[in-house]
Image 1 (cartoon, rainbow, N blue to C red):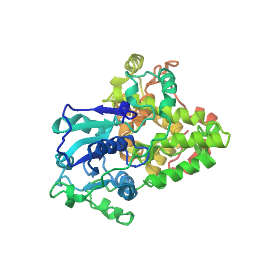
Image 2 (cartoon, one colour):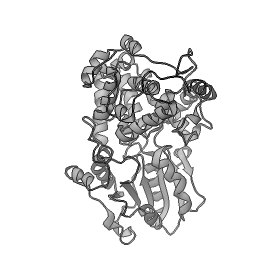
Image 3 (tube, rainbow, N blue to C red):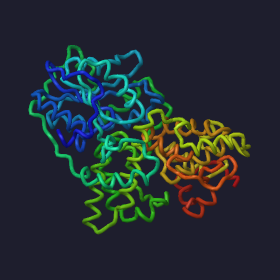
Image 4 (cartoon, rainbow, N blue to C red):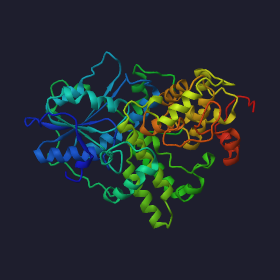
Length: 469
C-alpha cells in the first residue's frame, strides 16, 4: 500500500464504511487489469479489510458528442476486461445506459454497500467532473488513484510552464517509478449475492458479436462511422505495441516526424481509454531497446516527459478549453492582432468536411474523419491553419476542440488540450511577429513541403478537393 500512496488522493472526509460488503472500484479511465494502480490500491484495501472487490464500469449515452465511433471503441474492450477480472476473482458489473430516461445512479447505489470507493484520477472530461461532484454525496471514503502517469501527478506541486521545467524532475523521479507493478489477487472471491437488491438486472452482457446492436440501441449520434483501422481492447493495444517495437522503434528517432513513414506507435487511443498503460509501454520499449541495442530516448521523451507535461497542465488548469489559460505573452500578442484581416475564412462545415483550398490540410482532416486521429506533427499544421482561416482565434479554438470531441479516439485527453493550446503558444516561446499570429509560431505549406513528404501523405488520405495553391 505504501508504494501506491503517492498516487492516491482522498477526495472527501468520510471514514471507511466498516459495515461495507465490498470495496467498489469505479472504472472511469483505466480499463485494464495489468499495470493498473487504481485496481491495485482497491484490491489491497479490500484484502486488508477481508472483503471482496467489485469493479463497476458504465457507459452513458449522455456525454457530449456521444457517437458510434467512441461507443464502439469502449465496448470493444469490455469482453476482454471482464474475462481478465473474472479470472482473477474480482466482481464486474458493466452497465450501458442507452437513453436519458434510463437509471443514472448506479454508482451511488453500489456505494451504499461499499467499504470504500476507489476510482481513476484523470484530469480532464467527465472523469474530472465526476471526481469533483460525486465524493461529497457519498457516506464512505472516496479515493482517486493516478494510473495514467509513470511519475505520479501528485509529485509535481505546481504547473510546469514548459518541457524544460518539468523534465529534470521527471528524470530524477523516474527510477522510483519505472518498474513493474506487482499484481495482487483478492483473498476473498466475489459473489453476486453481495450486490444491492435489484442492481444485478442492470448488468449489460457485452460480446464482440453483439456490440453493433448495443450501439444501435443507444440514443447517440449514429452518423459518425467507426474508425477504419482502430479497434478497442488490450489485445489490440498490445498488438500495436509489438508492431511498433519490431518494425518502428529503430526508425522512430529519424522518421517519427515524417507522417507518411508510419514510424509512430499509434497507441494514443489505447492510452486515452486505458486499454494499455504508459508504464507497460515504457517498460516494453526500454527492454526491447536494451535487448536489440537500440536507442529509445526520443520515444521515451514523448511518452513520458511530453505526455506527463500535458497531465500536469490539465491537473493544475481544470478549465482548459479557453484562451484564458495561456501565458501572458500569448494573450497580449493575440489581443494586438485580433482585428487583423483574414484573406480566407472557412465555416465549421467546410472544416469538418475537409473542404479547403489546401490539399495537405484536407488530408489531415480526412485522417481524422476516417481513422479517428491525426499524426502529431501534422496536427500542429492542422491547428495553425484553422487559426489562420477562422474569423477569430477564439472561434478557431472552439473548432479544434469540437472536431476532436466528435471524431478523435484520443480526444478529450490532456494531450489533446495541450496539443491544441500549443498552437496558441502554450509550452512554446515567442517567434517573429506577423499578421494574425503576432508572436505565435507560424507554419506554412511550403515549410511542410520542405520538411516532409506531403505527396505521399496526401495519397494515403486523398481528398477530392481541388488545390488552389
